[in-house]
Image 1 (cartoon, rainbow, N blue to C red):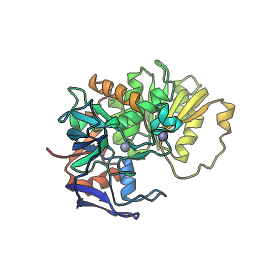
Image 2: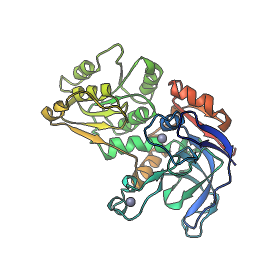
Image 3: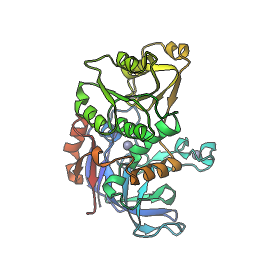
Image 4: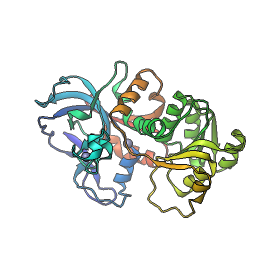
Length: 346
Ligand SMILES: [Zn+2]
Ligand SMILES: [Zn+2]
């Protein structure tokens, strides 16, 4: 089968290769991949921007869905031919406190698809049965492939933040996760929803308006903190979602959050921040990290997708075949794409 393989721990060591179809064990299914989303993480792996090295060669891709082609003998609750979407925790230990309390996404032994084990930029992928969710009727493969980034937003905003109907929220960074965050916040009734981005994000800020944002702020032209204070009677927002993950965005979050409020940090940033966090103390505010997601979040997000409360179509800017990966990765790197999905086995 054809697969997009990262074969070294240097930039640009990614190419399409012919590799064997994976063999499954008793607890796995063989999934015929139908659609897979390209994530910012995939771009970083391609350019090898992170400090980690990977157990190469590895097939990339962690946002995916498809049809069950083969089924292991221990799996009783799924059938061949069913349409399913997969969580990302491909390997977990199953024995630690996190695993035993349902927080297996935080298992220290967790390995994700597409970087810890072979992922889904391929015709087939081996998936443990415990990762699978049925795709609701009326949700297409193209849309189901983007359940994962929607789950990142839901986990951050609903599970780990106190999102409140009728209360203000500021979302910093209108990338795909920021835009999913807008949709989740809107579905929960937050008001007003404000989204901050830079000159590079003009198109994405426009998209944020379509998806439920009440105000967008171009921080290259306007002072976001003053804007937020004007909208909240000088108090600041009870919830800031930092989906950008750099020094400037955290500084903005600290200045914009209200006393007693919360900053939920979704965006990663490898660089240290160079300012005091004392504002967090004087405001008695909370800084909450978030990582990945688990079963109940997936079920909730799929329910929201099937009701149209999370819309996927406006998030998709490109649909491509696998052999167009390189030009599409470049478009994403230059912020010219919202979400691109790769279509397989059509
Ligand atoms: Zn992703
Ligand atoms: Zn564990």
